[in-house]
Amino acid sequence: MFDFIVSIVILAAFALLAGAFFLYRRGNTKQAVLMAVLAAVMIVNVAIWLIPTADGGSLSDVAASGEN
Image (cartoon, rainbow, N blue to C red):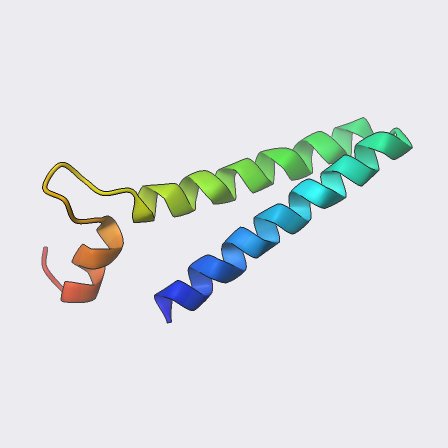
């Protein structure tokens, strides 16, 4: 289930980036920047969960195993 949620978040981030690009081209700069910032926050959040830690595991692995 976690993989599905991560996939949806990444797809939504790319959709936000595409929407921000089109809004920026139409001259709606403020909303385009806000959409791009939201997409960046979403991508960084996924990266935090998926990038391996020093011991080789990721936060998602620790959450799935139930360890503290």
